[in-house]
Amino acid sequence: MHSSQFPAEPPSNGMVERDLTVGDVPGLRSPASGADRAPLMFDVIIAGCGPTGAMLAAELRLHDVRVLVLEKETEPKSSVRIVGLHIRSLELMAMRGLLERVLQHGRQRPAGGFFAAINKPVPKSLDSAHAYMVGIPQPVIERLLEEHAIELGAQVRRGCAVAGFEQDDEGVTVELADGQQLRSRYLVGCDGARSTVRKLLGVGFPGEPSRTDTLMGEMKVGVPQEEIAAKVTEISETHKRFWLRPFGEGAYSVVVPAAGVSDRAEPPTIEDFKQQLRTIAGTDFGVHSPRWLSRFGDATRLAERYRVGRVLLAGDAAHIHPPIGGQGLNLGVQDAFNLGWKLAAQIRGWAPEPLLDTYQAERHPVAEDVLDNTRAQMELLSTEPGPQAVRRLLTELMDLDEVNRHLIEKITAIGIRYDFGAGPDLLGRRLRDIDVKQGHLYGLLHHGRGLLLDRTERLTVGGWSDRVDYLADPTAVLDVPCVLLRPDGHVAWIGDDQQDLDDHLSRWFGRPAD
Ligand SMILES: Cc1cc2nc3c(=O)[nH]c(=O)nc-3n(C[C@H](O)[C@H](O)[C@H](O)COP(=O)(O)OP(=O)(O)OC[C@H]3O[C@@H](n4cnc5c(N)ncnc54)[C@H](O)[C@@H]3O)c2cc1C
Image (cartoon, rainbow, N blue to C red):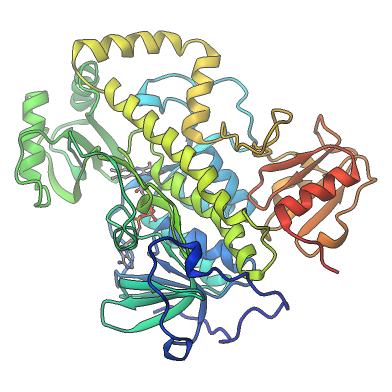
């Protein structure tokens, strides 16, 4: 068990959160009387210490929020599946000073060729200082994020499964599988695709069930590399859900369709892999000595709501889709990045009225878009003549740099533009990591505060200086006079007028301090 101690009293900045009342939350039970409730020991309890939960815990700790992460597994995951961190996630790592650690443990790869595994070069001049992909074992990125959260003061308790909860006007009583009760102001379900929190909340999870299963694993082979390479190239022409790639230390990463193999409820066996390899390649390549074997489906579902009162959902608990394009972990970590400062603001007492609800307003459409692009990609993997023809057509179209760029910006999440109302194209988008006089812009965002970047040197953040940093830099490479950045790096305002700025500071950062 990891731990760090918190004081039991509420935040000490003199601000208190605005309480919800049961009347705000349809369908909730009346609260137990205050005298019966356990003390509010935590501001936020997070169910699940996967990448989403760990990232959220760290983001909340940047604002001194008292966070407890409950993780049902006693040990971190042992599978060594490599996941791809895409550009926007790498930018987030740079914004919190984590990129060096990630790069030490991952392998950089070009940021192209992800859409439906259509092999195309990286589009020209992607708008990022971190325009590459990093392949990293999922347990390693999870460990790095968990360590980061703990360094910032989050408590992580392993072997603790959330089994129930009840919310009332002041907080949420969370019940663990062993019957223990804990209380916090908010609960966030980051507990993965089968989320207990989502189910108990009664939030619908509409979408499509899995239609095609795929086997994935890591194992040794019994034939020479040259023999494999020639065969794999030939089969890949027609079978898009297939690969057999060297993975280092004599191991191979193997992906094959799971059609017709053993019981879905049972974990796959090496025999299942052999059988499927023989079916599509005519040989099983002598595979043996598996390090791990897994099966995944293409179920595609999106939670109807991301928030009910004091309980929220993030990551796979809120959305699932096939892993094509490698977006799920990225999407969850980016949910956490969007939610963290907003929930912290609510708890610290400075959140303007609708701020917390902008989490769903901004992130639900992003997930809808990811679900759609994975649906499209899965169609393009089909071996049927129609989808194959569409794939050939798209392959041609992707020779147009603009088409290739559009698809890669989607997968890497740098094309996202939140709807902040009318304004220049940059409004609502994230700002790339530009050079500023102190070095790199993202280096100034490690503390999760807002930032006013002022090229006119005339403006001020006045009464918001406890939440928003100020940087006067006429040399900054920007083609607008000033930008106000939210803690997640999205552009909340562009202009040069102090009154207009103050209005936008109020919109995003609440009332100024006296
Ligand atoms: C084959 C494959 C390849 C993939 N490749 C990529 C890729 O390249 N890039 C990418 O971005 N994504 C990829 N993904 C998707 C990625 O693995 C998931 O989207 C990601 O793990 C979601 O993170 P999460 O934290 O939301 O949920 P999870 O990782 O599922 O974590 C949830 C955590 O909650 C815990 N938990 C569950 N229930 C409870 C409870 N009741 N109480 C307390 N704790 C609980 C679980 O033990 C777990 O630790 C891939 C997925 C698959 C299957």
